[in-house]
Structure formats: structure tokens, C-alpha cells
Image 1 (cartoon, rainbow, N blue to C red):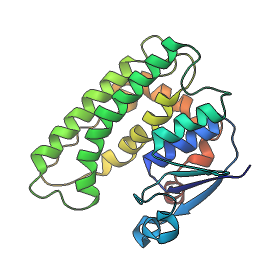
Image 2 (cartoon, rainbow, N blue to C red):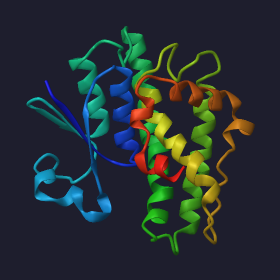
Image 3 (cartoon, helix red, strand yellow):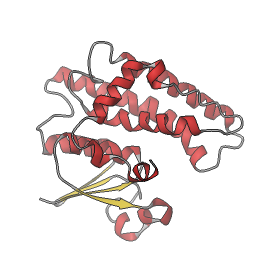
Amino acid sequence: MSRTLYFVSGSPFAWRVMLAMGLKGLEYDAKLLNGSEGDTKKPEFLALNPRGKVPVLVDGEITVYESIAILAYLDRAYPETSLFGESPADAARIWQRLMEVENYLGTAFVGAFRPLFTQTFEGKEAEINEHFASIGAEIKTASGWLADRDYMAGDAPSAVDVTLYPALAMFRRVGPTLSVPGIKPNLPDFDADYPTLAAWMKRIEALPGFDDAYPPHWRDAA
């Protein structure tokens, strides 16, 4: 059965799916789209996802969009190396933390970075700074999840880890370069401020398939 994943380089939502597929050892054809050239708004892509966003997974006759839905699909279709745990208690903890990442860190992520990336931040500086403060608080919370375990919800990587890592990688990469009048990201230095979290990131970077999932334009710029 052929698998195709449509993605935009650097999209944290697509990246989480690619990490999950690598973790599960699934082969797939990665179709790179260029958002700035309108690839996600072309009729052939809108036929796959009428919302015009990545990621989209085409697995044989099944097409799934929305990254969390894709993770859930992958876990049911390919149960080896579970993303959502082996027991009801595991599943509850993983889903709880996954939704914390999505609802709190994810909301703050979009609120802080979308105006900056789209150059629509003027007049929104106070609101953006509040979002960055929320990001800092959520990073501290996530670091606490590692107090007695190697991964975010247990002793093995899960949907929480593959969802959280791309956002933190973007903070680590983009944060030091942000210089906008009135904007104070105050993002942490992971190595200095959260060494446990920095060590976790290195564990994620050593997982199978990580290199294949790494954003191509980040690699080209290195």
C-alpha cells in the first residue's frame, strides 16, 4: 500500500506526523509543497483537503487531514509502537497532555508567531507579549513532566513527544533571531534554563526517522 504525506517545510503540524511515521517505521513518499507559491490552494490539493492546509496523509484509499487525526489514524492502522499507550491509564495521560500542548502551548504559539510571520504585528505588541509569556509558562510545565521519566508521558515516546518537539525546535531556532520593536519573546535557553528538556530533545533527535523529517529548508540553511 502506498503512503503519501503532503507537507510544507517547517510546518510543525506536518513535522509531528513525519516524526510519528518514522517512529513507527513506516515508509512514505513526502510531497513538499510551497505555500508561498500557492501550492496548498491549487485545485488538486484542495480536493484532498478543502481547508488548504498541511499535513495531508493519503494511505491507499484513505485520505486524512488535521495532524492529530492523522496520529490517531496511524495508531489504529499500524498499532506497532503505539503513540497512545498500552492501557486505559496510558491513553488518558497521553491524551490529556497532548491536549494541553495543543490547547495551551499551541494557542500561544499561533498567537505569538502568526502576526510576526505575516507582518501584521503592529498594534498587537502587548497581546503578542502575553502569548510569549504563556509559551514560557507552558515550556516550564512540559519540563516538569520529565521529572521522573525519559519522555513526556512515560518511558517511551508517544503522541505528546512528537507533537511538542517541533514547536520547541522552532522556539529554539527562531527565538534568538527575533528582533521586533515592542516584542519581548523572553524564550528560554534550553541548555541553561531547562537541561532536562534539552536532554529530552536530544533523545527525540536520536529516534528513527528524525533525519528524514527534519525541515529541508532548515538543513539547506545550516
